Amino acid sequence: MTERYAYVPHRLLRRRVRDIASGVEGELMAVINENVSDSAVHECWVELAYIRDASGREFTTAAPNVAPADAQPRTAVGR
Image: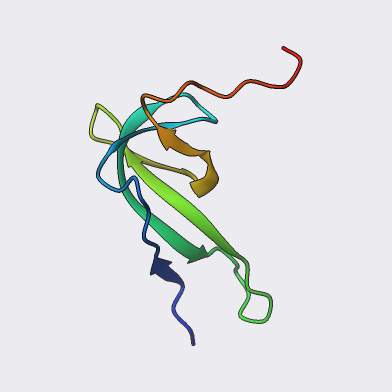
């Protein structure tokens, strides 16, 4: 059986970030390449970012959704 996760280096680790999907800010604690499949035959790997918000709770988001907290939020083209 293979490992179900692996830590991924990220330039914003331990820095203040924003989840662009929800707009919530916090500290990036880890980015993990995680096997979210329930089958050993068909593996499905995703990079999840673990962010700790101001209350101390951690939540996950897709790693591409992580941006520096001081960056402007992205908007849809044409808005």
